[in-house]
Amino acid sequence: HKATTCGNHVHRLSCETGVIIVQNSLYGRADGETCAGGKTAEEVANTACSLESHPVYFCRCNGKKVCEVTPAIFTTDPCNDTFKYLETSYSCVPAIHLIACEHSLAHLQCDAGQIIHVYHADFGRQDPNICSFRRDSAQLQNVKCSRPTNKVAERCNGSNSCSIQAECSVLGNACPNTYKYLELTYTCQRKYLKGESHTVCDTRGGKKMILTHSCSNIH
Image (cartoon, rainbow, N blue to C red; front, top):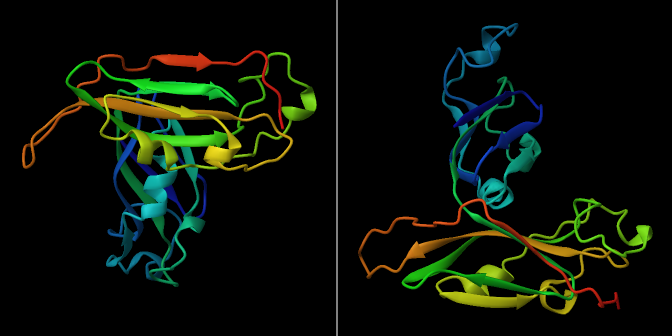
């Protein structure tokens, strides 16, 4: 897949099935034709102007079904007087999608001979309906509460099975007084020897599980 966005507009990546894995990205200008409509010759003349593969971009989008970014993530302007565009090549890969409501236990499991690889994990709230059963509406209103966390990857990557508690004490508290949930995507990879290439061999792509704890309270 490839997505190209001109100027400062929102850049959107999406996967109908599977999750996003960014292959490479380019912000700037590498040719005189892309996003050149209505621009002067001077604005598209510099074709050696680009920033490539920004790490924040990978962290923000990998493992998600939909990702939106703007050029603001690039803190450096590679060429002030050139009209730029953001171009991304990405793949949609199978993944297991897991949601664990706050105070619940998230359990990641692979088949025998496979190990966990976490693509993305986020603890917060971005949807008012997820993990909302018997919750006060005031605890569900803040849907701009998001804290990507590497705690799940640190604990689980390379293991055959792994559990982690969806608790603020473990994952941090991005938004007090909001009932949160842990949302993550991971895949199961074949164990491989050092120096041996490995392939993703997840057989449960797209599976979505929701774990809840009916008698938990926010502290």
